[in-house]
Length: 167
Image (cartoon, rainbow, N blue to C red):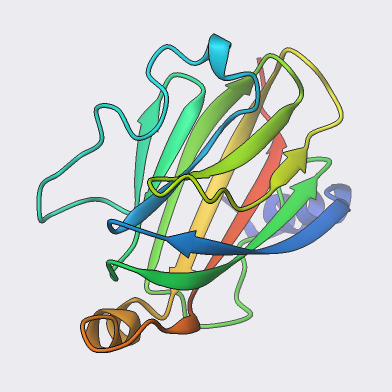
C-alpha cells in the first residue's frame, strides 16, 4: 500500500477505547470469545490446538484462541477499540503478530481461560457486529524461559487492536 494511502487511513482511525487486563494464562493459552456462550458453537477450550507448534492465534466461530509461550503465568492484555483500521503498532519489538476476524452477537467479548478464572470483558458498543482483530505479542522468549521455574507476572504482553470489519 502506498505511503499517502496508509497515512490517510491512519488519520481516519481513532482510538475509541483502551483497556488493560491481567490474564491468568493456564495450559499455554486463553481465548477472546463472544460473551453469550450459547452463541459459540465450540466454546473455549474445546477443540483447542494441542500441538507443540501452536500459532499465536487460532480462529473459531465467535472465538479466538491465543497461544502463550508459557504454561502458567499472568500476562498483560491491552485492548484498543478503534473506529477504523489503525496503523501498525511500533511501540515495542513484537515477537509475533496475526490478524483475524470475530463476530459478536451480544456486542461484548470475554477473556476465557482453561482454569476458568476469566480475565475481563470488552464492550464493543454494537450487537451483531463483525470485527477485525490484529494481535501482537512480546515477552514470549522470556516467559518460555522463566515459566518452568516460577509464575511470571507481566512478562508476556499482548496488544489487541479491534475495528469494525468491512462487510
